[in-house]
Image (cartoon, rainbow, N blue to C red; front, side):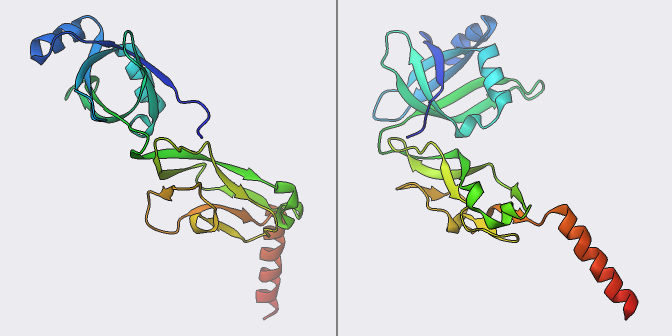
Length: 206
């Protein structure tokens, strides 16, 4: 399971409609709604500065949150839309979807590399080049993996690790429907220079 689901603290919003939304914005809040998951839609509001900070951190629409509202049970949600001001590009409204344990969502999961000391290519001075430090997977809300583990044991210089060569957590599948590269073991710069030099000599002799 994923290690720590970040909390997102919000307040219940008593009014609905454009008037209530404008009042929330004047108070430094961003109006929103929580829907789905078998429950009724709930109007909420979040502090503008808190939401803006989260948005700047990135991956907001692909992050699972533990929504905390006073007087309500905590619920897992994922953002399904952020409306922004057309001129200032600042958030004016946000939509969250409640998740059941069986809900399927797409999330970015970090990649962890193990057994570097058992990779002949790295022992020879090869360099592990990470193309994707995280991969987007479709997972169930009740079974979110903490990481995708890549075993480097036995890998040599020139070997490439693609998503198809990695054992994914049970029930998870890649969001991208192609065999993309996660990382590779590149030749050490000294070896590359040596090979280029040898190639140049061969061309001169010819």
